[in-house]
Length: 505
Ligand SMILES: NC(=O)C1=CN([C@@H]2O[C@H](COP(=O)(O)OP(=O)(O)OC[C@H]3O[C@@H](n4cnc5c(N)ncnc54)[C@H](O)[C@@H]3O)[C@@H](O)[C@H]2O)[C@@H](O)CC1
Ligand SMILES: [K+]
Image 1 (cartoon, protein in one colour):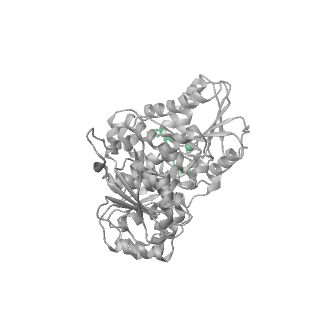
Image 2 (cartoon, rainbow, N blue to C red):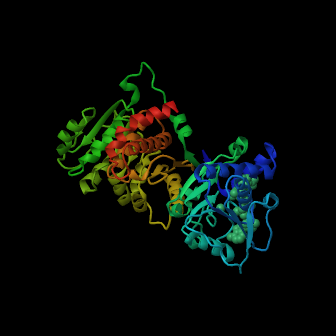
Image 3 (tube, rainbow, N blue to C red):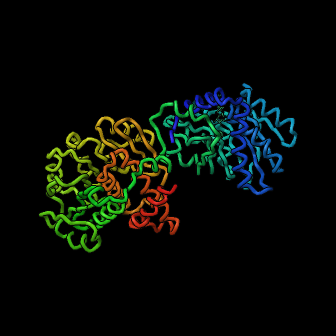
């Protein structure tokens, strides 16, 4: 799915109105009816709802929804924020329709009016501002937002929590943004919803399809995408009946050191469960028994060192290389990695964990990396590769620049993992859960990415598909257990189900 800036969404709204064609007011009616469906599905018949209505079309949506709900629910109050400048045409039409219906109390709130009572048991519907917000809230709007946030009531935001910008919130006033429990957003998640600093505002967000025109969506260019089932499925390759293991590549994983052999085992499992034909895992001597005993499907390549990686095997026979999990950052390992990179191999490669920490200490290695190498930093590792940042929005801009400038596919791990590609595109992942913040989860991902690279997926395809499958497997694992108890090994165990679900979807 494409993701857009709010200004672009306004353009797609306009395209829909002209080309479906549909009138502005009927499109609003369609949007409002999706809100109403959701609310009726979740509210008890005696639920008291308080609507807060702003001057634009977000307010218009709220007024239309209040009218539709007033036929079904008895306790609806509507407060219109009076900024003294009137309302948009469609909002006005909906105000007249609500007045004519005559089932709802409508009160105007101006700067001097006392704030209405909101009980913790009420549901507040926030229709103050949506995609048309142009600056941080001040004065009366900020006062209303603070009053709602302090109420303890459940807050349902229409389209965007009022006060939140769709993209960049660095200059925003965080105290003057609605803190919603649920955000019912139209057609697309907004980019700001995918950044960690905005989680307190959006709460749980749900996308409601309002039928914007597919041609309008298709024609609008954007660097941002959201990897949903459809995207991931389109990347998945078939396995032919007469295929043999030679068709699915031979991966080399360089991983593990004294005390960190588990990382090598977990990454090996991830790799083998992602469909690779053959896997050789290169480990220090002490890791030989551990590896062979825990994962007999992997072949072992043994380092000359007992304790750590120091020298790679001959790389000629491998289709892809993964390096990093449990590697350590000792000097001898660093020299080993440097020697390997100086071979100027042109094989697909994924670098994780201590591989990234070594790269951060030796930025001159960047130009030795094979084209489109996949790097998989979490925010801390990314800060070491670049510099610390203030917020997720800044990190996202930096990731896009870093990927483009260095020709790498950057997998920025976290909720909605963002994959920045050298072509300037950025793919947010839709699967996964907080249980994945556990030891070894990243090692499993490295293994999956390595396995996909060895099978001939491009770096971009491997990253988008691999991250999606990793998250989906973890989602299945959590269905059987809990976020708290999720182990990285549970992710590898559910990879089969993740592949199968994607194929059958
Ligand atoms: N255009 C369409 O066809 C559709 C729009 N929809 C709704 O319309 C919304 C967008 O509507 P609008 O573009 O009217 O935008 P808003 O409803 O967000 O309001 C914009 C209005 O608020 C004013 N404003 C902006 N920032 C302000 C601030 N900080 N303080 C005070 N006033 C401020 C603007 O001058 C403008 O008058 C969407 O979020 C969605 O809820 C939906 O009805 C779907 C269809
Ligand atoms: K809103």
